[in-house]
Amino acid sequence: MGRLTFDAIVVGAGPAGVAAALTMARGGLKVIIIERGRFAGAKNLFGGVFYTHALADVLPDYWERKPPFERPVTEQGYWMLSPDSVIRVMHKSERYRKEPADAYTVLRARFDPWFAEQAVKAGALLITRTTVTRLLKDERERVIGVDTDRPEGSVYAPVVIIAEGVNNLLTRQAGLIASDLPPTHVALAVKEYINLPAKELQARFGLSGPHEGVAIDVFGDVTLGLPGTGFIYTDQSGISIGVGMLLDEFITHRLRPYQVLERFKNHPVIRPYLEGGEVREYGAHLIPEMGYDRMPKLAGDGVMVAGDAAGMVDALHREGTNLAITAGRAAGETTLAAHQQGDFSAAFLNRYRRTLEDSFVLKDMKQYRRMTDFLESSPQFMGTYVNLLNEAALRYFTAHGIPKREMEHDILKMVRERRSFTGVAWDMLKLMRAMRG
Amino acid sequence: MSNNHHMTAPVAEVSLPHVNLDDLIVCLKYYVDEEVAHIRIKDQAICTTCDPKPCLAFCPAHVFETDRQGRVMVSYQACVECGSCRIACPFRNVDWRLPRGGYGVAYKYG
Image (cartoon, rainbow over all chains, first blue to last red):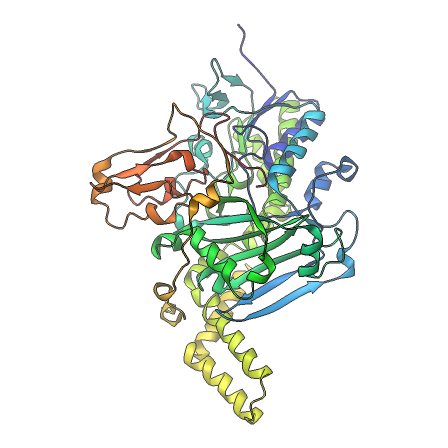
């Protein structure tokens, strides 16, 4: 029997892999996507806000293809939670209300199968329930295919695009990254999907109908004041609620993730939103937060890596799937060019990296390269400051017969006690440095 | 420039609510591989000497539990395949692989 050969192999049917496969199939290549789940998306979970700009680039008529979005994000912002209070900074605008919108909430086990189907319609072959066990290399260490757990399951192609996700086993085998992610550079997030009738949901969040939705990122008490965030996103008839922190924080403080989430759900400010809702699913996922400087090499001989496996996440703006789709498309375009030239060397495939350097993907990654280190070294941002703000607000909004001058004095004194003025100045400087890159 | 002592609400003083994880796991769909365990402890002797045993806490599906001898037992059937134990075991003593194709967790919502 002859070898099973394709023009390109994609490992993983997530956003990066599917975008790559779609791009290549449309360019006329014979493409196979190998997915270990029972269907595309079976293993995938995220918060989930999905940004449409990257999807529009890879699939201009996506709207006519009826993507299974939950709700457009028409209001978004931050809740800063102290143990008994909250400061809400929300942005709602009529300008978010357009069709298609810039951002939608999404459930991945619904969205990913739809996206994969578009690649199949374009001519890609999607093989599910198949785990890639290793990369196949020739005597010169060039990647020439993959081995799977199917009997006689070797598949060959001059290019393999690794879109395996955060557990980067193949990326390591390819030699694109030297070591595993340490627990200080990866976040662990747990999430629940809570079912709630759409009408009830809309009433609670002040939404006028299914064409409105909210995305809230929560800081402070949600993570016990540790670096990390919580989130509450409205789905069509349910709420996605979760907490994410660096894995290292769970280890150091010996925290059980589901208990941290339960505590968040029980917070007096949060609980009324969830009342009577039914937990339909619980899940957990890692988020790579290694940052620009610790990303793997993006290309080798006969191989490229995209998405979470390459650490393509902008945690500050909770972006990831849009980086993944843009990277997948760039890897696909590079493969098309490589086939035209008949050159699959690392030097040629490195075009992929240069394309991303010119796009928001690596520009943003580069700008926020210090973010993870900053949060690790300045834990007071999530704890002290959020509590301070809430207490200052309480004093500001309360009338209790104390002259206002005294109240201002009290607030300043509180700041000084909890974090000296020079401390505050340092923190602001460090924050600016982390933000400006 | 150590600022860390300025943190309020020391984590140790925060009491966390009890959670019956089984109530959460029960709404998950699994296709359990009865033949092959995708997570294994490489060397039980290392686990018995590991004092903090962080895996007992951080694992979001509480896959790891100790028996009376201090060995670590693995209920890989409940694993949601996040990969935390793969990188967070202080002794790199967890042999973590991907489940065979089609097996393991299958999210309905995700």
